[in-house]
Amino acid sequence: MELEEKLRILAGAAKYDVSCSSSGSNRPNTGGTGNAAVSGICHAWTADGRCVSLLKVLYTNLCSFDCSYCFCRRSNDVPRASFSPDELARLTMAFYRRNYIEGLFLSSAVAVNPDRTMERLIRVAEILRFREGFQGYIHMKAIPGADLALVTRLGFLVDRMSINMEFSTHRQLHLLAPDKQAGQIRGAMLSVRDTINEFSNLPAVRRNDTRFVPAGQSTQMIVGAGDDTDSDILSSAQNMYREMRMKRVFYSAYIPVNLPHPLAVASPVPLRREHRIYQADWLIRFYGFEAGELLTPGANLDLAVDPKAAWAVQHHDQFPVNVNRAPYEMLLRVPGIGVKSAKRIVASRRMGRLTYDSLAKIGVVMKRASHFLTAEGTRATPVIDQPERLYRLLTDGTAQTHQQLSFFDGVP
Ligand code: SF4
Image 1 (cartoon, rainbow, N blue to C red):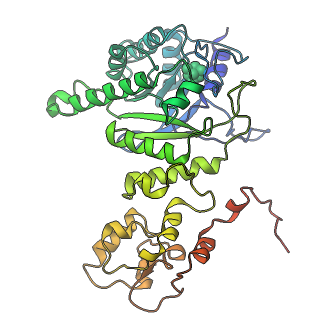
Image 2: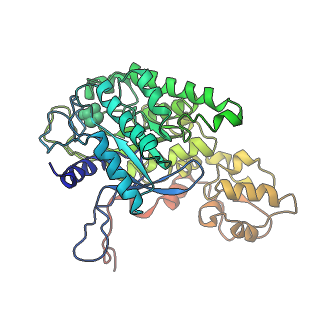
Image 3: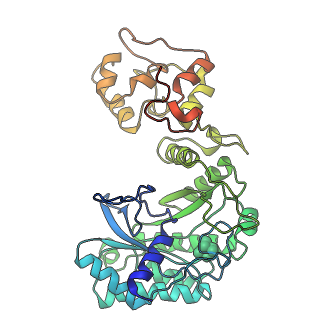
């Protein structure tokens, strides 16, 4: 098979992997410039905050596993292809030299067995690092079930490593990905965490010579392919951030991409569900929320309002807060106040009392926040103490129908 054809198949198969941020658009080129639907190059953020473009591709899509939700599963009837380590390294370097990419995001199906596949991925990384002298960003997926010594070896070659968790419960993983074992996935994550800890504690002078996964580890969970609720998913993510020191948990709304499989869900999951889970994930990481505060066990997030607004409506008895006195932690819970504006409020009120007018100037979104706070001066909108009215005010437009309106919909 021609290299170009392999690239077409294996870059196309990699687009379902979201642990590397990239466009989810499906707008093809119909004769103009650019194409948002083409797979192959995606963008990611490095540890120092730079945005880099990566060649996003699978090493092979020839899988010996049969995960019900996956495009590459062995029982799916799709064209198959594999690179050799040398081909893939040459391709990466060729794209790099042409300035198309700054790094590589490499994942793979499980060809033959996990160890064999892992050895191939390591070989790609070794050729790039040692033969080609490539110092750019490499993000690779560790293969579930591979020997931990191989996982560690790969960790010394790449910047970021992902090991996909897939589901929040062992039962779902066992049912939908019967060849994978939750204990092995967890064991690999713990091993990566411990080695990261070991090397980050080295004296700075030695750390520069020996880097182990310097951009940290990440994982991915599938939303809606099984029966995990949003509360299961967020509790599991919270544990991974705390216990495994995960840099990121990515969420992927399930899309039916398969020939019929007895266990595969037939309809796609609304992207808005994935979006709400990302918002709740953000609240857990940066706003001091616990997963259990956002959702009761077994519940899903409200699609019509964002999770912070939903929490505020449910706890309307804790509002309004006085911006001139409220602690930082409580300011973060006010809809319309973000981390930056909460910090600015705390800094500004040392200089004098804050008024409604000054809040808008320091970045507070008053359209939302004004219902939940008090400040000096005359307020433009009243505090609303009826939760139903608050809820209606905070509902975001099209969410109630979950449909995009056309330009003329709703025009009288
Ligand atoms: S191991 Fe499962 S999820 Fe991974 S490529 Fe194979 S079938 Fe897909």
